[in-house]
Length: 286
Length: 247
Image (cartoon, rainbow over all chains, first blue to last red; front, side):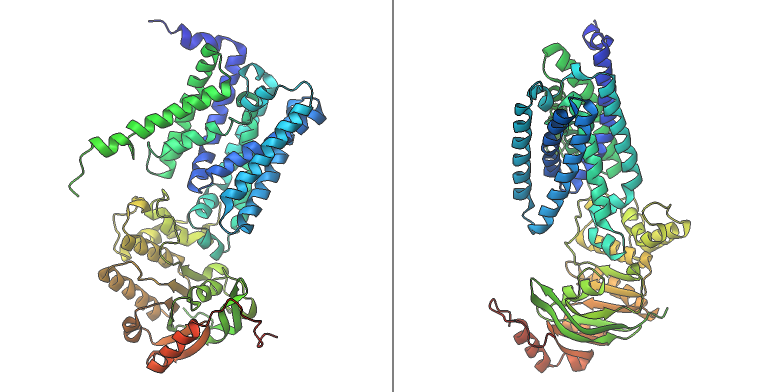
């Protein structure tokens, strides 16, 4: 049996760079995603990824398609949207989903409008990514922002977990919950922006969220879920890049589809809380 | 352990301008064991949250005698926490030592030992690595009591500590509360079981947004006071006017 189809694509420089970048994102994104899921903020990640588009587009407009200008624009726009979303969530007294949906619709429309008005930017590449676009500079952006996000998460891990589980306790013992929340949002933005060159702004949250959503089918506790999510993301990255190469699909959707397939697998036959676990496993004696 | 007295000076706390706690003055004597009783909507939870620093005073003020935030421990009402969160019992209980470790420092050995001891005290030895999602409501309440034990605060605020737990668990937890009282801590508990209050709580604050009575339990829980409390609590009005007592 030949494994040419498996190894050959990675003989190409851009595929190797894309793989390295996606490995970096797979290490940083899924742990953030697991916490987003636990904080019941899965929708917020959607808002952020739509929110960075106007910033990326403005960065392209002002900085003349420099990747760093686009990245910086994306980070600034993402932080602005995170602050706006946080404020709306508080101000709307529990009806935050409608507010968030409103924010991301407006941000997406604004982004598309700016991109369309800017000559020379390929909207599809910006939205869905392109492995061909992963040059050394893009790889540096992906790996750099992923490393920073992972390090940052390691630093704020304990207060963030406490603030997610029992925010009232955190406030009562004098720990300032809002600071950790904002820092966390900043890390998510960083990671989403890091992924946009290869995965596109619409898809880069997929590598963060889908493995995190699937992780509960593979591990019961928080450290286990984080580890499972990272492994799932790594598998999805490799599978997605191969799919992208062989089937000529943009890398973003290919990787997200692979992650989605892993999620479905977990849902159906995963070791925990899956269809298989529910149907085929006898209950215990005690 | 001698906590300072906790004084309330004409305290008013509001939800959307409607008073939940209305012109409440008085003090919790150091080492006292006080039940806060009153009908639903009487402001009991709001009072506890205000004492814990989680609800601002709209008028008046609370004097906690200079206690640091974590020196007043709060047991929140059951059901306000996400019990499906994938953390272990030991991790939750160890959080009681938050002030000693903070966001970044290592859990002190003394606190780690205290954590395991506290789990034994509440009858959950062997549950250290169990995830809280696998616990019953009563067992989860025991975990939160263990966290209070680790927090080791001189003032404890308990919001309906025996809700949704069976009588055996309630008995065990009541024994813990009594031991905290014997150690000289100030304990303030919101309760609905008046028989338990009469039996086990020397002091009672009967609240119906306004204070109805505050003092020795038998005197406070007279039939007349209880009727007054019910009538006062029902006096919520959509067209309420500004309180003329307000300065």
